[in-house]
Image (cartoon, rainbow, N blue to C red; front, side, top):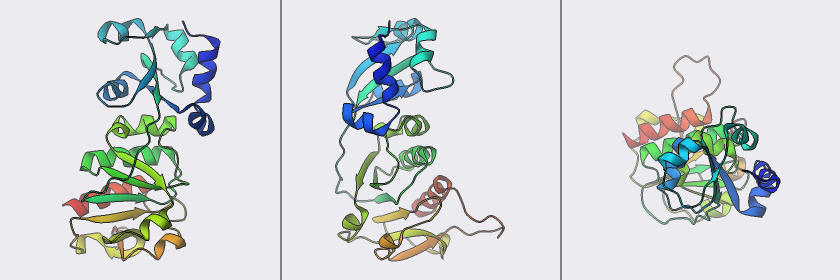
Length: 238
C-alpha cells in the first residue's frame, strides 16, 4: 500500500527542483524497468503490481493495485511498475569518437529521442548546455526508452567546454555545407542548436565547420532537432 507521504514525494518529482532536492527521479513501465535493472543506477523504491512481482526477483517491493498505480503514475496508461531511482552524477569522459553537443534543447521528447538515437549509433557521450531540458524529466526518461542508462549525459557551460576542445567542431545549420559532401574525421564534436533559434551566437565562434541536410523539396522551413540529429549521425558514421 502506498502512503500519503510516498504519493506526495512521487508527485513532487515531476518538477526539476524537487528532483534536485531529493536526488531522485522516476522510472515507469516494465520495459524501461528491465533496462534499469541491468544498469548500475541505484534503485531506492519499487511500487509494482502482483503480476510484475511474480515475474521479477527483487528484495524490497511495495505491492500496489492498478488503482494505486494510476494515482502515483505520470502516465496515461500506467504499466505494472514505478521505481524511484538515485540521480547519477556523470563526468565528461575523455575518449575518442563522436561527442554530441546540445545547445539549449528545450523539448523533453526531443532530448529523449536524441539520447535513444545516440545509443543506437554508439555515441556514448552527450554534452548539454545548462539550459537544456533535464535528462531526468519524466518525459525524457520515457522517450529515451532505457537509453539514458547507457549514454553519458552531462551538463556544463558550453562556451567554457568548447573553448578547450582541440578536435574539429561541426555545427548543424540550415545553410551549411551538404553533409553528404564531407569526409568526416573519426573524432569530432557535433553541435545541435535550439529548436526555435538554432545554435547560439556564443557557440558559433567555436564551430569550424557548418554542415546541413539538403532540403530537397525547398518547402519545409526546418527539420525537428531529433530527426536532424538522427540523419546527421547516420551520414557522419557511414
